[in-house]
Length: 245
Image (cartoon, rainbow, N blue to C red):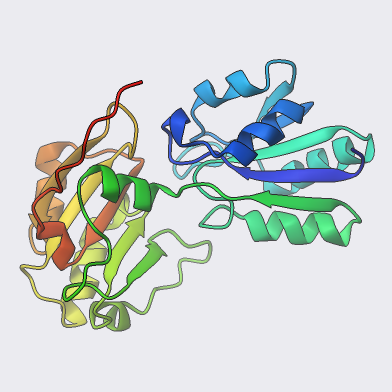
């Protein structure tokens, strides 16, 4: 396969949540460019590939995006089967569309492979239905970390009537709380804080919007973590069967 790059979602962390199509791509891979939040366990599906860490993570030293572009282009033009392996889904806060557009502009075929995003996996593992008849008619995924520090339209989000799932928000809990309160959201709106979604070390705590910063402090919440804000976060945990292989 020549001049092609696979942009593959590795899922939220649990290696058993990797899709069959992702496994197929990894089986063929000669070069795998891997993000920081990808569980190394998924690399068992590409034992003969060259693994190249190209992580980008807030607060840490990151690989420049232009360098990642050049690497993908170089190996694709050499006729290598290149897999760009991203945590979660490549097109949910993962720069997948940016990389696909850049590669296409340079004549490289791109194939996208979906992955389960952390917000969905974490909520389900905690028994939180992100949509619920009569309670939440939709779900909105947002990131608290923006490239140019532009502000989200928090008043609109506060009044949307949807469940909010906030990525990369641990360092901005005070700003999120104050912005949503100022936008008219109730102080007692339920919140779930979920750390290491889908992994064995996943942890969660529940609070209200008004108390979530203190709850996170007491809980010693650390990244990577997501926030689920909405009525559904107060729902009792669903009785989920534990299936062991």
